[in-house]
Image (cartoon, rainbow, N blue to C red; front, side, top):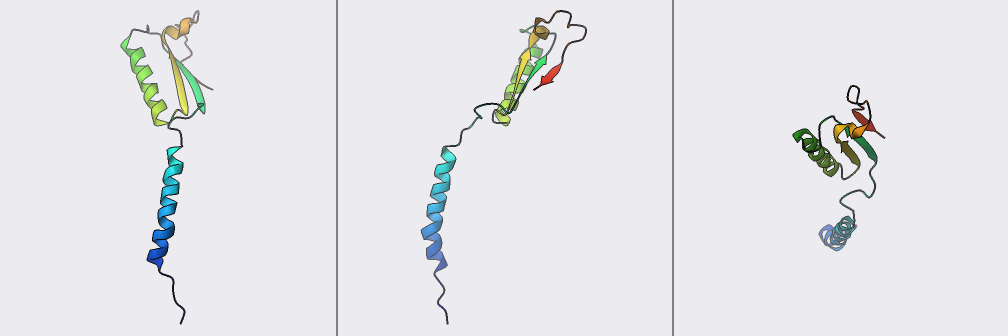
Length: 95
């Protein structure tokens, strides 16, 4: 008859070291990405002091937080002063 190892003792011996090692490794991971994976821009025809501009800036900031900085969108009021763009503005560009 073969003697089986004490699995509880092995778990306590090796399991605790694995748990502590994995928790130490997760401490060093950054919360936000260093560089965005995708960057883009959004244009609108309202002034910077309008409620639409502040809403869009807050919206894209929330998206950046949710994606850990992987998606960064810059919002430009008044179509970024592009001449003749009020009739046909570039609404959204993703690069």
